Length: 155
Image (cartoon, rainbow, N blue to C red):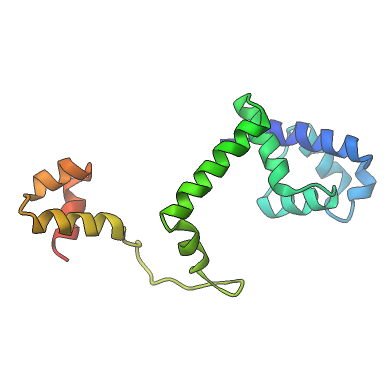
């Protein structure tokens, strides 16, 4: 999902409303870079976008909300409501807690090498195995690949 044009138009509008010119943002990025961004001819990193939003005295989440709303051709309220529902669902699933557990203070914890396991799927496979279902039945029931079921079956 490229938001290059949406970011371009949104930055241009925010800069105009806030009364900034390119020179006012020179501490964040060169005038030429901002010009390219506002013409949709350049990409931007998330870190630089947040830095630019803050220089424009505009909340980065509000900026992204505007960009996504434009891309989806919907009101910003709809975009925010969908995001709120997604965050609520993620929180109910323990996602927010899991995200926060990935850090010690502001530092990202190191994780073991290799592909992280899906404990939810592993638990489901073990539960269905305990109920006497075959590997093929478990794969169909959970919609998992048979190789995935086999891997969890062995643990």
